[in-house]
Structure formats: C-alpha cells, structure tokens
Image (cartoon, one colour):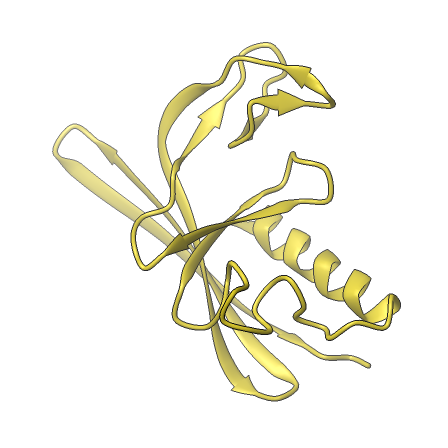
Length: 130
C-alpha cells in the first residue's frame, strides 16, 4: 500500500514542478485512470510509475517475478521481457475529493487463502502545495 502512496505523491510533485494541474493524468478529469469514483492501480515498476484504470471493477492481481524478487503488473523490467507469476494479492486505489486543494487516497489490498478472505486498507490525504 505504501509504495502506491509514494508513487502518487511523486506524480503530484512532478505535475506541480512542471507547471501542470497537480492531478493531471491522475484524477483531474473523467478520462484520468484514478478519477473520482473509479478504481485504479499503480504499476510502480514501469518507467514513471504507470496508472492502470480499473473502472468500477476489480483491478488485476499483483504478479511476482522470481528472477528479480519484484512485485508488479508489467511484462518488462528495465526494458527486458520477464516472466511474472500471479499472486493472491490485488491492490486498488480510490480517490475522493475533499476540496479543490485536498484529496483522500484509499489503498486497499485484498487476498484470499483457501476459504479465508483478508483485506488491508490505508488512507492518506495529499494536498496541492502550489
């Protein structure tokens, strides 16, 4: 969950530094992957941390790479094609607008083992610091 928050903060900071809307490409308009009311996921291993739109349904399962020991969604790592093994974990991100300068981010990690289903949730607020 924490790496999703860090990636999203980094995207917000990069937008602000480059003179763009602080949520551009994240949740600034209805075409953005994490627009309010939609679910998205963060592929932290892709270059520049890519957002994956999940709409209102479930995001894909996180995958594991035996060679690198990394978890992610992409079929490449540092430009090389690698094999990923599906895990039981699914990470979803949802944005809620508090006001024009603050959004709340909820990251949920779900997993099942046998008949037991588990869930971990973490919430952080980020601000438009410009």
